[in-house]
Amino acid sequence: MDRDVVQQVLTEAVFVVLAGFSMGTLVAVANFADYGLLLGLDVGGTIIFVALAAGIAIGLRLRDVEPQYLVLAGFVGSSMAIVIVLISVFAPVFAGVVPALGPSDSARAVIIFVSLFLIPLHLVGCVAGYALADFLAPEGLRRGRNLERL
Amino acid sequence: MTWFAKVAAVFLAVLAIVGAIVWVNFLDRYIAASDARRQIGGNVGYENVTIPAVTSPDQNVTVGVRFFLRNPSGIAIDIMHISYRFYMDNLTDTRSFAEKGASIFVVAGGFFPPGVGYVVGPHSTGIVWGNATVFGETQPTQLARLNLTFGGRYFPIIDASLVYRVHGTSIVERVLGIEFATSGGIVPYGS
Image 1 (cartoon, rainbow over the protein chains, first blue to last red):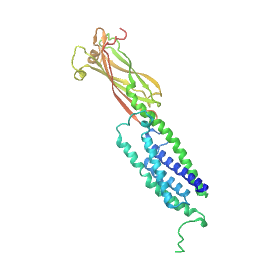
Image 2 (tube, chains in turn blue, brown; image 1 turned 60 degrees about the horizontal axis):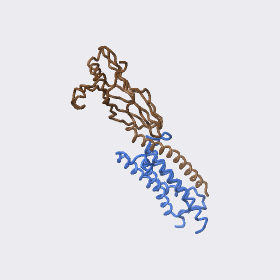
Image 3 (cartoon, chains in turn blue, brown; image 1 turned 135 degrees about the vertical axis):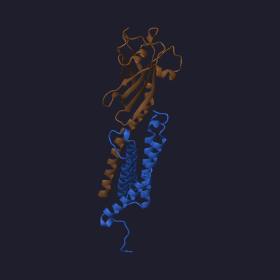
Image 4 (cartoon, rainbow over the protein chains, first blue to last red; image 1 turned 90 degrees about the vertical axis):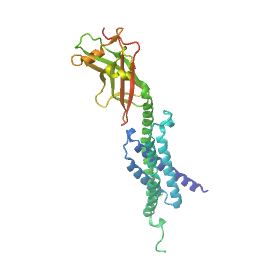
């Protein structure tokens, strides 16, 4: 494989990881607002804003790739975010300070469930960003359908 | 690279940095708070109980109960209040505590700090006095119950509860059943 292609794939992979990381961390912090001193976030607003904004950013960056890779990147990013939410929920167990979490299983289930909404929202954001990139691109670089030719 | 790809890259980087900062802060507090909530029940107790000698039927008697709270966690704990019910055991009454509790109850007391509470820092111990007063003039029955000694010693029973907040959070917890009983008795203070 061409070295430039590999470099570009790795670069974009880093940004997909950054998107997943930022979504996961901010959604986790929003869900545990009781513990936060630095930032008080609304859960619903955070999920919608972060998933869409990160998705649009990824869509803007992946303007040159085939759409299926965009969707794949969206899935990878949002899946990574959900893994970070899971790690956050069970952090005291992983840290070894408690053998098992307390009795509020339903609260944890709700946190994990609402984080699943990141997947569709992030994909919508990716597609919107992809379309926006095509709209913002200079005339000669647009990749959309040529309606005049049809 | 187009200008909007650069903007997107900067946006993602900033979002990730902000996320990392607040996440690390949250994880630190969440883990420390979980540690505190698990351990606090076994780290609160009594250091001392002082009961003055009763010398007259209209005396005002202030019972002093000194509590300790060890905070083994890495996050501060705010004592919001410690409240207790003070009983004086009647050793001649062989009924269970549940049955005779109402007849040996003396007074309620506690430690009620003003404001946000009494802060016990991480990995430190807080010691507080919780007082209760029996006014002999208006509470003769309670004073009579209090002034019950066997072999010149008091045999108090205290049932306390602690309400605390994990510092800087809105997590408030209660520890019930912090019990004090003595088999050797307590020598009246100032006798």
